[in-house]
Image (cartoon, rainbow over all chains, first blue to last red; front, side, top):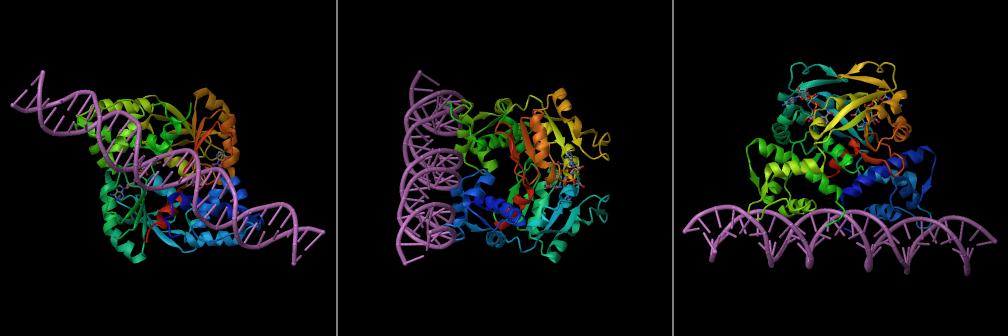
Length: 205
Length: 205
DNA sequence: ATGGCTATGTGAAATAATTCACAAACAATG
DNA sequence: CATTGTTTGTGAATTATTTCACATAGCCAT
Ligand SMILES: NC(=O)c1ccc[n+]([C@@H]2O[C@H](COP(=O)([O-])OP(=O)(O)OC[C@H]3O[C@@H](n4cnc5c(N)ncnc54)[C@H](O)[C@@H]3O)[C@@H](O)[C@H]2O)c1
Ligand SMILES: NC(=O)c1ccc[n+]([C@@H]2O[C@H](COP(=O)([O-])OP(=O)(O)OC[C@H]3O[C@@H](n4cnc5c(N)ncnc54)[C@H](O)[C@@H]3O)[C@@H](O)[C@H]2O)c1
């Protein structure tokens, strides 16, 4: 053990969690790596290898206890511990994202939303009062927000990212098609939707 | 040559394209694999290997001609050829996506949008008249739409995906947190935003 | 031209991720 | 409690991707 855990493994862990959650609702008590793998169209050995990073979670001959495994994964991923996020840029995409219930289900809480436009500041958007970006640092510190979702226009992305870093944000989910340059300390995940669409369409016909 | 091209290579090609586009606007005529790689924080050898799948695109000693390379990549990815897409489910996320200009820049045209709710059908949303999902097949065929963006509620996802397959859709960009089961012929890309956020936050601290 | 430099293109090596395959653990059954 | 059958956990093998390293093409100055 003591190996570095691949990011892919973490992603699959989340998928396992979703299925286990569903299986439990259905009353399923036990599942084998093979059955779980079949649901996801992967190999049983992949499931077992992923889980083996975190100890011996199954029982030979019997498979995995659905509830126990779900809870263990929740603990590994800290789904049980609420984490606060903010959304910066309350335009089309930002507004859609704060309305999304799927974040809550994984332990996220939108604790603040920001914009620069006087049309939005101090107005309620999907139940969240929009703050002035000027107050970014203050509010992030007050609420101990660690993660930011960045949905400002591309032109403002780098500048805003720097403000987020200065405010002490640890991770950014970046929806802008801009490569952000920050210190290595800030973890960045880029969601490039146009790219996903293009990649997809490249592989047809 | 004649090797299978990795999906990762296609993704990077798109990033190269964006930078080349930008560099050309700045008046840069030539660039080395090293300089381009530095912008993306990858290795020069990665750039060269990626490009080598498509022939000899550079000049030894001099690097790559920015305009020529940009155009070659546009051709490889068929950015020059318009591809029609539809958006199914015009809720929060669907409405945000049809407003996005970034798709057009890569050669996509939103040719139709669909919903099931009488509140939306026949109403204009961001400039697109929303069609009844009942007419999916007809409209997809009329416009020769090949790609669908799926943004219906999770409960309706599998059923809607089957309708899309039957209507002749070749590829689906799936925003629902549901594993779609379709025949192998339909290419599916899943965008799981809650998962991206969770993966991101797992790796901090 | 010739020679010196620079940067490509590409096999080979290194690294990473997935899959195989099987011994060992445990369940179930009689 | 022994025997049979099932399924885990994990090294080893395989496959995929990235990086190295260098021969060689082509630019440029003289
Ligand atoms: N709309 C989409 O579907 C979509 C898809 C993929 C990517 N994106 C990207 O997401 C980003 C937002 O897209 P959108 O369509 O929501 O744009 P939008 O114009 O609707 O929203 C941007 C919001 O950011 C605010 N803003 C501008 N500068 C700011 C600043 N410095 N600080 C704080 N707020 C600021 C604006 O007032 C506006 O409300 C863009 O970078 C876009 O490329 C959007
Ligand atoms: N909102 C987000 O930011 C976000 C983020 C990630 C994923 N998602 C996923 O995207 C999907 C849509 O999210 P949303 O927030 O836009 O939801 P929403 O409820 O705002 O929109 C869903 C839309 O789909 C329509 N619809 C319902 N059944 C349909 C059917 N059978 N055919 C056609 N249209 C139908 C509804 O009328 C509604 O307009 C969900 O699956 C959600 O999990 C949303």
